[in-house]
Image (cartoon, rainbow, N blue to C red; front, side, top):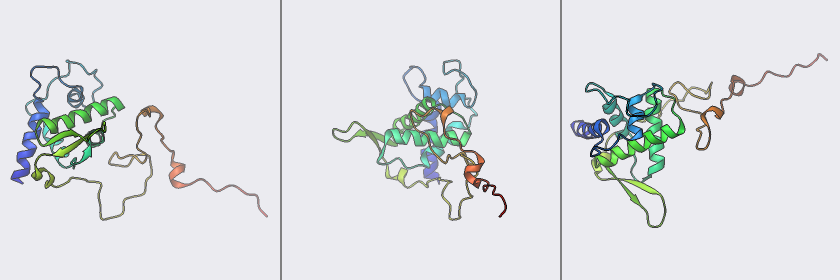
Length: 193
C-alpha cells in the first residue's frame, strides 16, 4: 500500500501543477479545474486549491487502469471516460479529448509511462516504465461476479452508456432509446373471434 501511495502522490503532484516552464495551462487541465461549471476554457478558471482532493482522486483513478501496450488515443478516451463518469460531468467530445490527453500527458510527465511509435505506423503507444505500476490493483468497479441489473435506460446508475458514441457523433444526436425499447412493445390489439 505504501508503494502504491508513492506513485499516487507522484502522479497527483503532476496533475495539480503540471510542470510546464511558465507556459499556459493545457486545455485538459482547465477542463479538470473547471469541473461541471459551464465556464469558458480560459485563464479565468482558478487553479486547484491546496485542499482540493481532485488531483489525488484523478491519480488514483489513472493508476487503477492499465495503459501498458495500449494506443495513446484510446487510452486518452478511456481515462477521460473514467474521470467524466466519476464526477458526473457532461463534456463535449473535444473537452473529453482534451481531458484524456491531459491525463495521458500527466502519466508521461510523471515518468510512469512513456510514449513510443511503432515503426512506420502513425499511432503512438504507451509503455509502463516501471513494473511496479503494472502490479497496482486495478479499480474497475464495473467488474462483478454477480449478474448486472437489466438495462432500463441508455445509461446505468454508474453513468456507463449502452451504446458508446464516437467522433463525429454529436452528443445531441446520440441514440437515446425510450422505455419501450427495454420493456417491449404493447401487444397488438385484436378483435375477438
